[in-house]
Image (cartoon, rainbow, N blue to C red; front, side):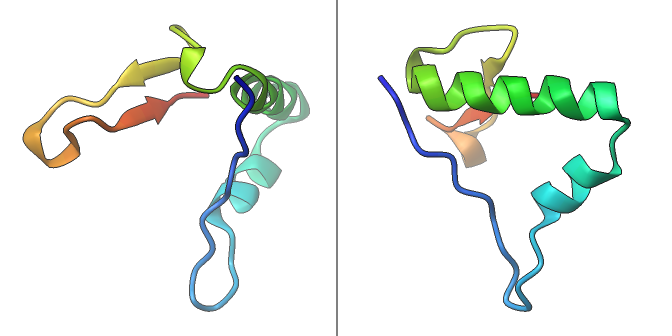
Length: 67
């Protein structure tokens, strides 16, 4: 099941995810982008090690997609 990945933007138009990816070394950026592509391709069916469940009542039901 494919999904669309959206990157958070601040009210000022900054995108912290892109800023973070741009700060990475080339090989780490490539790995992160590969995992983001996997997330787009497989969506919620993607399993560990790329994804995991966030613990705690505040985040109940939230899925964390780790890079």
